[in-house]
Length: 183
Ligand SMILES: [Mg+2]
Image (cartoon, rainbow, N blue to C red; front, side, top):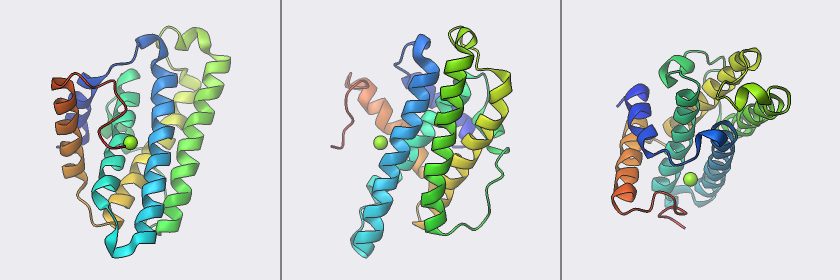
C-alpha cells in the first residue's frame, strides 16, 4: 500500500467537521507525534522487551493525520513527501529531536495562518503564502517517522495496512469517535 492508496482509504474514516479541519488535523499531528515520542522513550528503555507493536501503531496514527492534511489541502501525500529536505541517516536522538521540531513547525505555521488568514481558512483554503513551508515540514515529519520505523526494524507498509484494518474494525463497531482501542 503506497501513501496515496493509504490516503484514499484513510480519509473515509474522517469524523471531524469541515469547519475545524485545519486546526483539528494539526492538533492530531502534534498529539500523535507526542504519543510516538513516548513510545520511543519506552522502547529504548525496555530494550529487547520493548512493545514495538504499539510503537508501530503510533507511527501509522501520525500518517493518518498527515494524509488528512494532504486531503484537506487538495494534495496527495506522495507528492508532499517529495518536498522533504531533512538530513539522511539520522540517529535515533536526531529523530526524536526532529519529531518535536517538525511537528512544532507545523503547529507554528498553522497557528499563524489561523491568526492572519482566518477568512481563507474558514473557507477551507490554507494560505498559499504558508503552504509551501508547512508542506516541507509535513514531508520532513513523514520522513522522520519512516526513519523511526526503519530504526526499530518495522514494516512501514504493514503499519499502514494494519491502521486501515483497525479503522475498518472500529467503523464496523461504531466506535470511530472513541478514545482508541489501546489505553
Ligand atoms: Mg495514537
